[in-house]
Image 1 (tube, one colour):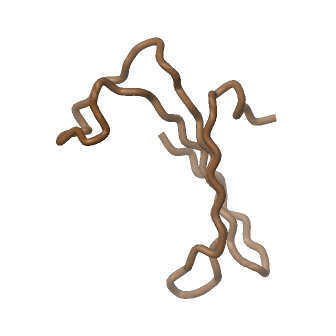
Image 2: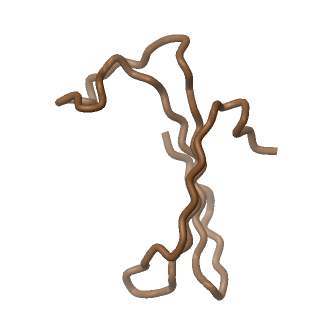
Length: 78
């Protein structure tokens, strides 16, 4: 599940931040039908934060990006 935060406009570009909650499933990475994978109970549930900076062009280009994932208790918003 991805939770986008509102984009922040700046003269140097547009900044977008996402928080993603992940869950382990019973399927392998190359499962042919990943939408049918069930979540495993009592497993790790990492949270990822992704930040992107886009230019102001008609077709925005990614100028910079940052990704960080960790256990949900390490990624709590303060």
